[in-house]
Length: 306
Image: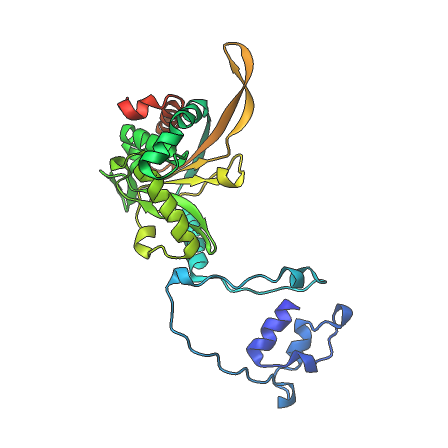
């Protein structure tokens, strides 16, 4: 049993020499306790010392692969140590839940105008800039557009002070073999659509290769998490401290909506904004999300800054 195995390891006892009293002859914790302090014939052989290897950066240490066949055979367990990156992510998520008053508000956006714009200019955009025009650049642009109107969403708490940031460093959540990482798109307000798309493509490639530097994963004033690439319909993203808000983007699907009294099919996307209610009131959060919705449903606003 797991508890028995842990205790035997701590006491240096070889469980193969113990007659188990549990189900199917399994060794229980009580069985191990009976042999604590008994002759050395029960002592486990000392494991050979592990070779010492040079310590690698946190991002270069993936978790050991999980043996699915072993897990599914009978009722065994496999203990796999967390990677240092996964441990750090877990600490940050627990910190966020424990220190922030997190609330989430939702809205829906008709992505047809953005899709029409992409279709109309995709080929020329790619020839001109050498990168495809994706959806994320629109979400980043719309987020910056809304953050300028509601600066408290771009702020953070430091003790009893609210720190308003005069810059827009947007964290972009991307998947990697070692888990979710959030590289920072610095000064996103100064980048055009092509610059944003190139930076995001570079983040994604280097995340897969484990080549993102620690400096690229720290800081940030606001984050965007796109669960839609995995098919997510709706979620409540967790704030990345010390930031005060995060935008969750989901899969765009054709859904029935009512326009001018008629039921029509439109490519809809559900947006979620999780925010720290300690400094962001519901009014600001809702209006912030509406500003993003309005910008995406009328992309000309992003060019005209209105």
